[in-house]
Amino acid sequence: MTTAFKDPSQRELFGHPVGLFILFFTEMWERFSYYGMRAILVLYLVQTTTDANPGLGWSNGEALALYGWYTMLVYVASIPGGWIADKFIGQKKSVLYGGILLVAGHSILAVEQLWAFYTGLGLIVAGVGMLKPNISTMVGGLYRQGDIRRDKGFTIFYIGINVGAFLSSLIVGYVGEVHGWHYGFGLAGIGMALGLLQYLVGQKYLKHVGNFLGTSENQVDKDAMKKPLTKIEKDRVIVLFISFLLVIVFWGAFEQAGGLMNIYAKEKTNRMLMGWEIPASWFQSLNAMFIIFLGTSVAAYWAKKKLKGKVATSLYKMIIGLIIMGTGFFFMSAASSQFESQGSSAMYWLVLAYLFHTVGELCISPVALSYITKLAPLKYGSLMMGIYFAMTGFGNKLAGLLGESAEGLGEFTVFTGIALFCVLFGTLVMVFRKKLEILTHGAEDDEHE
Image (cartoon, rainbow, N blue to C red):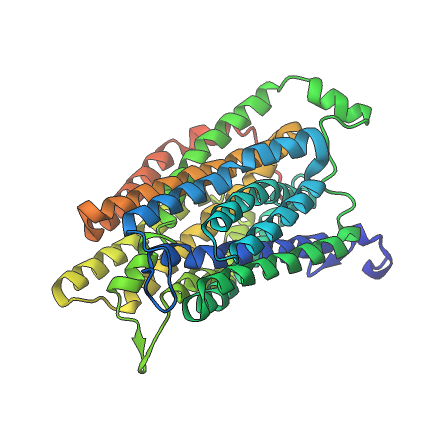
């Protein structure tokens, strides 16, 4: 039976369910809106009120503090978002309602009033909380247990995230910095509206995922919520929570991109290229660009290694990712040294740092999403995904605190400290990796093509 005559929910494209690409584009536009706004948020906050394109005139410390709180709450909201999906409305409807809240939030940010600014941020927090954990859980639901395509599928999905991030950093960043901050915020809202529209159009490819409810009338579902976790499920949850420590450390370092590294690019980096000054926000696109070019290659490398019987477990990948990402901060240490001696630093330091951060991210972030769908008990699938994103949020808050500390400690101390801690922490977890993997009870042992 050819793909053309299959039920839409069973059709495949490039060796993956068509539903993956519906979720790919939904997340792409959601991340276009989120990262577009993130690219200009701190720059808008620190811009003087008397400038031709006026901002709020906050200090760097004040701006980074808000950035930390906002990015933390965006992801912590994934816990109630996952719980609501598991208990009441399912993942599919949660993604829909989250998209509606996001369109409203980004649109309100286009209004040049302080009340609109805070209201918009609040709606975005709620919208991301509803959408983010549940769309990721739906991706996992597209694949059967043991399907080796699952990690690859999450990497393709992750590329969608970064196509959105790449385009938004260039387009929204340019519009916001050059034509007006609120035009940039409004443009992010248009992107989210497009994502919501194509999600609605593609529902026929998602009929079989995102429907699980703890309160379902289906007797099997009722029984599954009532039963206590088994010993194997408890052990797997323990491993997930320990892996979340890697997540907190990773994002605490990585999210310097939107905060301290963003300000560093604007204030201390020589951004002149052939007589034209590159907008500071454009450097936010480097990470996404590298993911688009390297994403499938990194995923293929790990899959090939797995099929050859070499070490390629999710936990191993995540540890390696943290170490590689941490190493990238040594380039920022070099940039800081150059600034101290010459009064400005070269752009290539930022490029190299983002390259290493990207390779590290590809080893930890999409892998962690896939890992959760392998280990989390079905009845807590979205909730565990929500907890993962909450850990991401705590990492974002840590990033804000580290960024604030640079005002007193200096960038060199902060960048070097981050690099050393990430490498040492990753090495420490590697020592205990095999003992932790025993607790997964072979969740990844039977993966095959």
